[in-house]
Image (cartoon, rainbow, N blue to C red; front, side, top):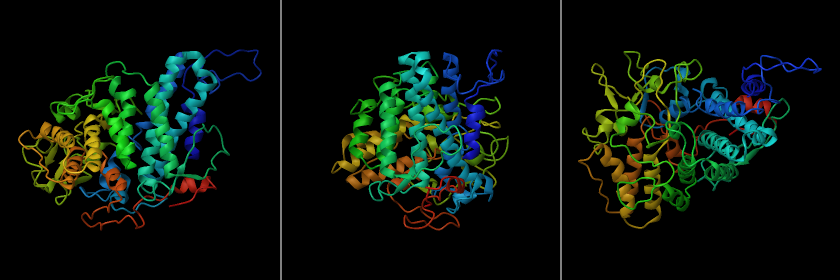
Length: 488
């Protein structure tokens, strides 16, 4: 983290632009950089600082690759093929240590780096930026900063803290840093509880919902936050807290109908696409993709070496990945209810003709892997709502059943999910989540929030909630720099 903080000081707030030097100044600002004193002086500089937060979020060590990959390979649906320590073998084995550079340390560091950029931006807007861009645009920017900060804290909780269900959030959470760090001597901060961190996350998302624009321009409805992005993320957060009533309240803001087809009727008009293949193979910025992270060929604007989702999950050959993780033949791919006619199996699963091993092929761009990593899709909002209704309504609720069937029948029109009891409906929804979001990083979140045992896979035994390794240790870098920090 120390190196990240130094980087923030020396470069990230200092866009490489040229400014004039006043010879009368005793300590002139270098001509080759913009210091944090001047980084909020013009509308374009403020905009650059806002873009930097998204850039940090989509780094390959965070949401640009590894965070999503880890969320899947911790679960039971993937088998490691390479024993490559760089690409999450310890994560798959459920035994990373606090000194694991490529997993525990790098994810912690990049997430807190992103949080610190958000904090510095919020501080800078209060000091100068709002006066430069005006109150309306400032509110939009601050909404983006708080949404990204909230997403970063939420993401850290899923790996480094006990689930909310374990003690209603009373267990140690994270150091809750809410002001920007510009220099050394600011690292000491005790852990807030899990509940306190969730309270801050929701506060940030509530602010974002109120202050973000209803819509953005064209593709930015997917790649930058708007009001419905905040609402959608709140459904995920409340689901992780098992606050099902609030999931329903939030989801109903953007799922207006009681029967299919479901869609949002205000702000960005989110809806399922006719085919799931569109959002992965054809068009990354449809109204189903509520928030995804764009990648380009520009150096530093794509995941980088051995971070890419395609590298983790896609087959060898034609520069389409390293096939690091195949699908577990005993996992979700073996479920008899997932029919061969389902588009998600027929078009987004690849079977190697020689080995007969199967791979997720949602990410089919070759090097430099420009697939847009998905953060949240409308399909998740529908299933979040379905689950929340099902868990709080006795019997089989008609709307919950319609919601899960909307997702299933989009890809498998010939199949209709039928349930005769509340538990059957809940089981059907959980099964649909595993199928729909395979390769999108949500499996770990689902296991953690329900305090479920991580099932066995290959040579890796099951991991119960009480065992060491159910959650990750704290980064050894944090422990060495923060004298008030405690390990898991």
